[in-house]
Length: 197
Image 1 (cartoon, rainbow, N blue to C red):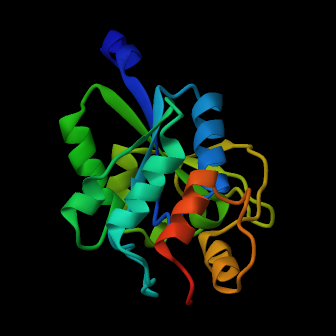
Image 2: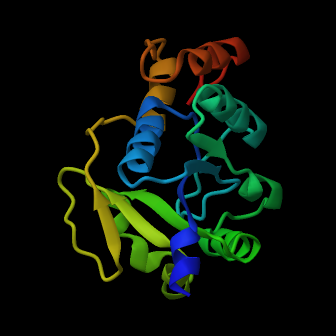
């Protein structure tokens, strides 16, 4: 049994709407994966986030194409499209149930920001979910480290950057150079995305 546990692959998961993917997403995935020694970190774009406040988003195919451009030169990052394929509301519990059933040889680590840790008690089927996946918390200034659930805390550089800020910058005609990978920036302008908020 111990031998079996030792042989399990360790894979990180970073979920999100990625509307658009930006440098902070990529830096967090890379840093956490490297610090915890994961075989790989999978970026997990949601089809429809299960938030109470419905978020407007662009077509999932465009979000996926930007993710592909952002990760194409990084062998440590991969994209898992199962939530896009499944459609409907993207509950982490459903995803983890499917992943763990299909990959019993893999141990999964779900990466969330320090701000999200406080919301864990409200997550769908959270008590069952914590039995399927390990949570990795990325420390954020102004947020505590307490949680009723086990969290592996990781320090990464603090970048105050959000997809909503990037969308606002584009709509206002501002620069997003260095905020997103260059190929993502080109894609946004080529497709005329986010010109209106």
